[in-house]
Length: 393
Length: 138
Image (cartoon, rainbow over all chains, first blue to last red):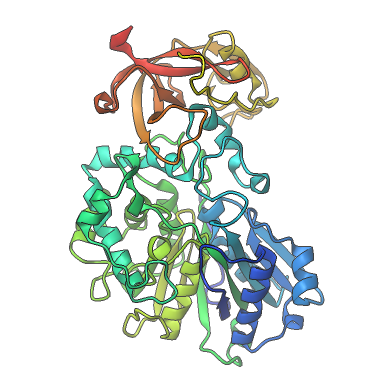
């Protein structure tokens, strides 16, 4: 395809970020969680609810716009959007918010996700034989081709790709384990994390029970979590007058390829490569003009550890099949070449469906992360088919 | 199979997917073939992505294929299935890929690239669905 377009570079900025606690039982509704995180994000931005005229979330988020507006006290919404692809679409909220701001469709956009993945009506990773009532219109049609065969969970959908990846490149479970050990090391020093003060060894990873053999042990899985994250996005000019250093959305993009699905791409020819992420990397770097060498910190959607390795390769931070060596070399650590998921990731911190990775990117660029990368100025965020580059420059 | 053995749920049949499940109920494995350009496609859908034709024929498939990938599912467990479930992606010789599962094979004997063949098993409400077993066992 020719004439690919990218967002106006840096036209919009993240000026507020907020969240609830991350827990296994929030004890309150998703609507309340969203209200709390959004209010915290607006306070952080030095704004009031009346300043907001745009709202963006995921198609799978259970909080209705109408209820949110009358709860938070938004006065007049000019723009709203929801992003498909489940967690793969999580960074897409930034693209939509930035596009709305750049086009004039909205001046101040709130992006949010509220989830009770652990204590809700059914656990997010549980075995279900029908798509959930809240998951329509979000890419779940493909699941009807999985469920009669017992392929019922996100882990099982992604595992079919992961096993082919292992086969193609000689990757072993311990290679995933080395990534998890690093994530849990980060989580161990993050008070907000599920894995706070609880690092693991590679042996513990290998001894944890199989969820899906031979690719996903229990410790390769993210933790189903209750909580909410919200972000406030506005034009970079207005952002300059607000309390925090603006975190510019350098670029943000979606790569939805032919035959892609919500949590798998089972019908694409080569499943050993996450080619949606290859396209995403091309759009973030080649098309938008950023250099991989400029990236100080990476936040990569790690619902399950194999897709962390596959995205590192797809984004071009190492060659195909080389993520295992890249990780074994210590690249993901604070003193490595690409500090990654410094909050512990979805595996170590918790699973707010990916939006907590955006929150961590903001903290890193503000210099307020618990595992701070020195002088971090540019971050890449990937959710495999949506992604963004955030920058102070 | 014992009378109280777990039995898998019946597929969700929609107007778009019925062509596949209705044939399976008769022990036939089929794919759509575009009447405009001849391209096979699965899962079924109303329009050919290659030529935009809405005209379709039904192509009978042999059921022979090779195992493209697999996953041995241990947890979580649903009462409708026996564990471990061996999930499978099968590349059929006609050139379409199916998501299904393997039967009649030990999990330790599963190998990517192994030849497999379709057979049909019942679901809770009666309809048959295609699953696969290693071809050597035929």
